[in-house]
Length: 411
Ligand SMILES: [Zn+2]
Image (tube, rainbow, N blue to C red; front, top):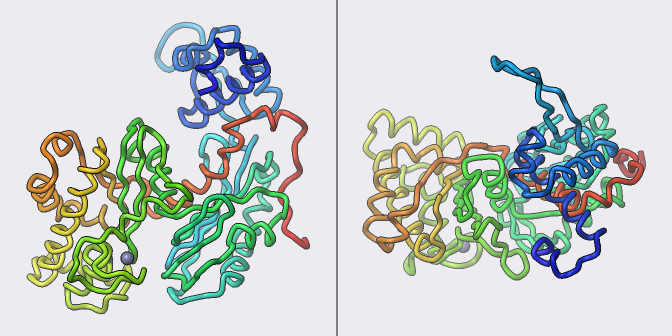
């Protein structure tokens, strides 16, 4: 938007800040590249690129490295590289059965990370935040954490208001109306900005920027765990709705005569395709978790009829829901994460058949269904992207002397 207005008389300072943002985004998403590649991709002039890069180099956000030519005669070319340790974020992930923390640098480099299992029971928010602090403590003592600290990103299995990180509902954690953003800010450095979002939304963001959907603009991300989460990307931007509650496709009503859902409704898509549904159809306890799901997959691979039928039933309902979503969003790509990604080789044909039967022919013919690439770390990586956003949006704010490293409250 700013770029489009340049011709109509924006102050040159605004132009400079916007262009710095364009360059830093190119390097953060595209990785090391030559100056001429940057000229080509940004359509900025060679001299503008030179001066912007020199500003970013003196701020230690970017490094210029002379790359030895590989098997090609001629001058070594200079590559412009994002400096991972020049700007860092802390990414946190609260899932049903694990907690994770990572220090992520500019360019998306994971500099340090840790994940621990947690019992899938309800815990007080203060207990979980305290566990996150213990998990993050050694990570924040790494030398790489001395880099310019941009902020904290948190992925959580719940419905989140983006403006202040309020978790309005997280049935799997037993939370209602929890001010998670505020709790995390208080437990860490009160000054560090904290951004909280739904973990499926952040998984989608990560797959879009660094995983299976790189280069795609209209993507539907559907992840099957205990709950069914989703993220919708429209025209290159995550769709979050008016307050950040959007994209809860697991709670799309699909079966008026269905089972009660954890959200309080009846017959949500999640009750037909979630982990619980798969296990129920397979004759197992619906709360058996990841191990039980793996056992069903193994049984199905061995040809046990009940397991095969359970996968078929989930595959069919998966196709039914996806067909409706294809008609609404016209995505070019559907990325299936969580156990959906793992069962795709077995249920792909059924999903395709339901899409063929139920989706409108034109959008159906354009859409591909692929498994997610980033696995269990996708939401954590997305939380890092969310936390890095203020730097990407306006790097000029960080060209001043560095802020000291993040200190734990009371440390
Ligand atoms: Zn529901």
